[in-house]
Image 1 (cartoon, one colour):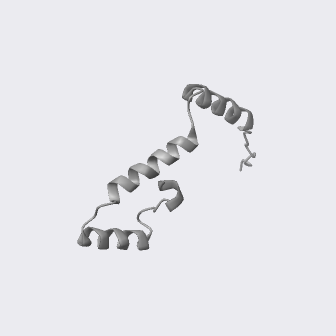
Image 2 (cartoon, one colour):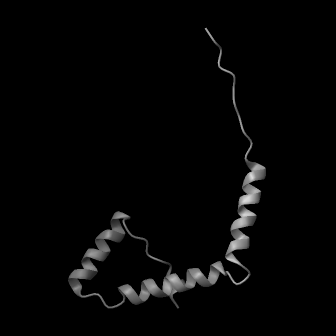
Image 3 (cartoon, one colour):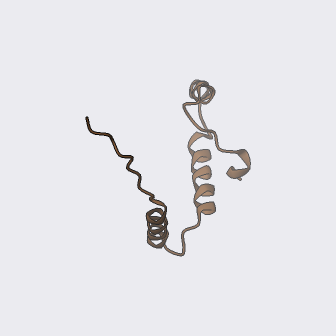
Length: 76
């Protein structure tokens, strides 16, 4: 009966190359903080004027963890 030989690959160097390629593709104007603030603002605009029934459903979804509620300071 054949014995299995452990087979391991260290992808650390490859991950560094992949990360560099992704950051290079995003370009110098990519700003994660600005993107996060824009997403929070879009969330606020989308859910700001719900009627009472919609607000109740939204609250249930938040309580169940089905939706994320962005931090209030991000929505300013």
